[in-house]
Image (tube, rainbow, N blue to C red; front, side, top):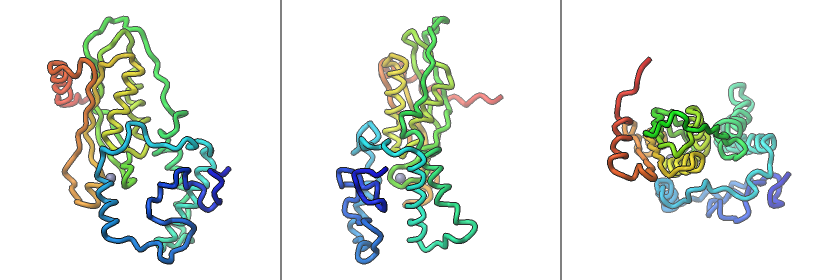
Length: 260
Ligand SMILES: [Zn+2]
């Protein structure tokens, strides 16, 4: 299947034509298309650092799932092989020849599987029979997501909390919700809000809190090469906007984790 009737060599050009934004990748011609100026590179770098410009929803095209997973893997394999080719790597080398398919499978089946709503966890809710009306905090949930500007990992921890409105959720579902939205190209701010919004919807309450503390490999392994800094983002809803409740949450998060 092809998207938008484009040729099979460039099947994913999208419908609005804005994706390339001056970076010409049409066809495979190398002549003159890579004359990027220093100014434009600088602008691209700055856009890569500007996290506020995008929407809360992951920007997806309406035809995002017209291709099935197997076809996506085949196409990504083909295109990633081309990237390696352009870099001058010898694809006949035993160690490299399987990489295009490995990367393609990893993108579709593992690290970006959260793009597909079909993979969204279905929450199991229970009645709050214990009448536990205090906050529940699930802390130190591992976050492994990918910077959408550089496609390298963002690794850290999420702490989520809610106050029951009459329903409670299976604890592991909190981890699953964090995991689902992490398996996408992301910016940390959007990931934080997407998790909070999903918790509000599922738990039928505004009383949720999400905090993420994470290291961005695009900051530590390139660019400024700062291996020490981490980024904290938070979303507070309902009662968590009240100072006492927020402080209680922050106290729990700051407590050393239990070891067993
Ligand atoms: Zn980045």
